[in-house]
Amino acid sequence: MSENPRPVSLDIEDWSVTYAGGKKQVRAVKNCSLSVARGKIAGLVGESGSGKSTLLMSVPKLLPAGTVTGGRIRCAGQEISSLGEDAINLWRWRRIALVPQGAMNSFTPHLTIERHISEVLNRHLGSSKKECAEKAAELAAMTGLEKGALHRYPHELSGGQKQRAALSVALACEPDFLLADEPTTALDVITQKDVLETIVSLVRERGMGLLLVTHDLPLAAAVSDSLVVMKDGEFVEHGPPREVSRSPRHPYTKKLVAAIIDMESGT
Ligand SMILES: Nc1ncnc2c1ncn2[C@@H]1O[C@H](COP(=O)(O)OP(=O)(O)OP(=O)(O)O)[C@@H](O)[C@H]1O
Ligand SMILES: [Mg+2]
Image (cartoon, rainbow, N blue to C red; front, top):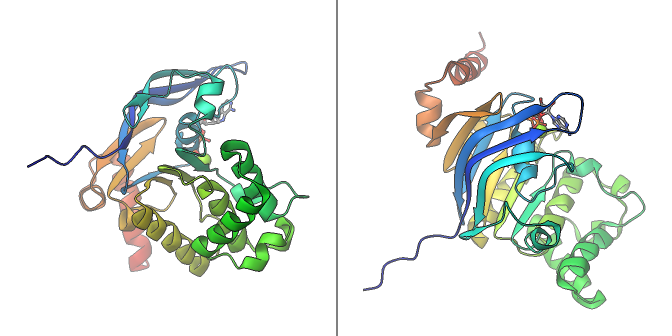
């Protein structure tokens, strides 16, 4: 009987990121390690400035020139952290896609949503106009975006529609791994829940791996297979969500959990 092959994973190993461009060096990520397998969700929570976005952006090497990194990142066993710009570009979107923080405000104003999707497909897969239109319609159906929204400009969409559009762009090339940076922040509670449910079911159905950044510990605990709490650039807690939220070990996580319990009990 053949053994199950090891699942394809994104492995971040002893990873550090230092911004070196300005007057002062900022060590934003310090010796962090994390693995996300395809089909699994890792939740990443932490206070503002703890390094969550830096970590996400560093995976597909989207940080400013001059940023110094240490450690190693592997995707499906291949080291990607040492790749140059041309080589990493082959991984971006196709294997690893990002929904950046504030994605809904970073569309190009004079391009329709379909054009945003087509540009990615054309640039990375060389898709024809017809293929792009077909794929855009398929993506809209997948992410719950009304088909008509594809032909509108970003400012003509609601926040929730823009988030679904950003998700459609990220999923255009059918990546193995999705890095989503606060994809539901700035939406009302109901829309947040709807968009998150869409993301989670797509991840499960398509067997993608998801690294999900959120400020919301209960939400992360509810949807993730593993949970990481970040503070001052370090992973201070890492484990199954139940364990992390039921018996937090680090003082920061204890405070976070206590604040949630206070909120829930109305004290
Ligand atoms: N381009 C940059 N140059 C220098 N320092 C930066 C840069 N971008 C972020 N930083 C610093 O790196 C640290 C981590 O920032 P980061 O944006 O990763 O935090 P975050 O956890 O995503 O915060 P938030 O929850 O507010 O989005 C902060 O101290 C921030 O000021
Ligand atoms: Mg951030």
